[in-house]
Image (cartoon, rainbow, N blue to C red; front, side):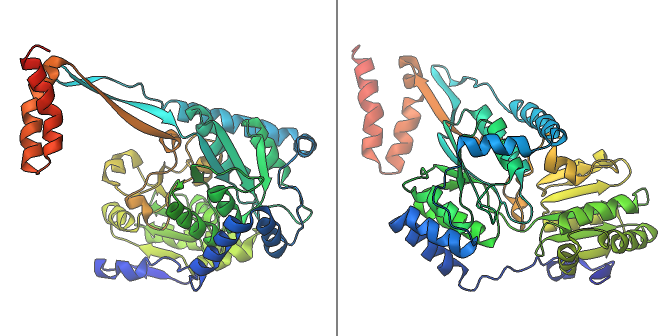
Length: 431
């Protein structure tokens, strides 16, 4: 196994923990050209790009009710039951994030509060290539439903026969999504950004994707469309002590490695025996995976590190800021307060990362590429905006008016000061 490090010095961490660099040559220019063409030509451009990138000719991008009904019949009852159970858990977890607004009297007569309002129109991008992520439909549509978003627009790439994966359609229908479009890639993000003859413009775009989709989402922000968070290749960091199970650790590492060739997994252990056994387990398990070529390629980007203590391992994890962090250690709850940077944390030997990907209830749309330092994963709050409200009585204005006048005058903003002074004067005059 390559990329093995034992007891690395802190000054080497930046090099040791470098993430795979995406090929960015001409990436922005390519995506920019796609955006411009979709903006100017609408559906015509989408048809051209669909034929070019997906090798399929699409005449009607909107998935029909007949197609949805037919797809539902293709999904096995076992999978339907599993999806419904996952939806139930995801709904329960995100519903609990709803908070009642509370009025705060900051000064006598001055009342302030916040209220949530749903983002009216949201675009949900669901990858459909080698791994059609119907689970992401749940992760995005369920909180959007709870938030009360007026319209959910789903875009996903068509398969070679022009259809959409049946599990994606079943899940979308289960979540109340009726507008599903057969379009993927940067062109789908462009369509959601500008709107076309078929696809409505949205206010915010959600969902993972390849480097073109990621670049497209970043470009969408320049056209005043918000996005959920910056995305990148999937990643996991596992910290293991002498109580860890090497078989489990290897499986968790490979569960992320199989996502894509640019995925990255980091394994840190404080026990050399567990470390060596995990490396052997990886070699054993990867050979049995259907996507083993993808996983093997991802392992080339990965790191296997032996450290002296859990505390030092957590310090390294905070430096790396992983999308997923697994603590396969004794008494993992004791270390939670020490973790500052992670998209989602998984505690103990029986909490696999794939539980969060599918059915435990937490959201799997998480910050990658180090953005866990300053971004949260998708939650109910991602689908709402908070509006502050204040109401000031006559007494309240008299209580804070002088403060406002002094501050406005100090900043040289006389009109600001006058807005208060005129009111105070009218109160003094009994008006």
